[in-house]
Image (cartoon, rainbow, N blue to C red; front, side, top):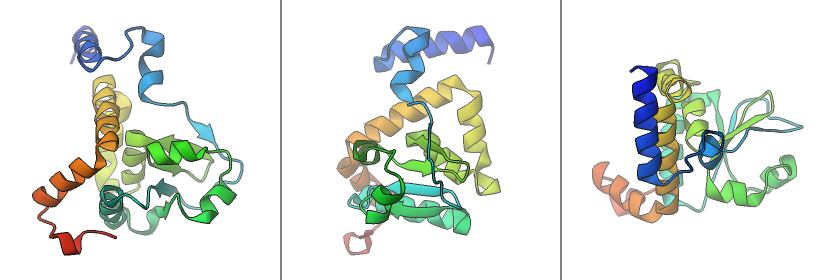
Length: 170
């Protein structure tokens, strides 16, 4: 897609989803700046909401895809607040957080794509996220919508993945 075409599509998407139109504020709305942790984990660590059925279901799927390359831990675990006091609880409540061994912290859709990229067969998602502003905007917007309506999207997940209620995670 040409730069002019992508820019036109980006501006249409921006107005469609109600994002700020200023180029400087464009991504601040979607993606928070990367934080750094003083004492990072040895392996990449994905922190998620352990009280959320939707979150537990998808974490279990991602765990299968990433094998032992990524660790997963619910933010309700007391180790999280002890080891990562730099990250406010509200940030854990709003989106998954991926903490990499270099101390970089990523959240929401970017965290998901970065964690999946530890599986060589899933790296294309992160490449698309990094190379396409349009893909990045749609991914972050979609993540925000899903995170605000987790119960509804878990119901859809159960229907489309044919998960009986008794086999739901938790």
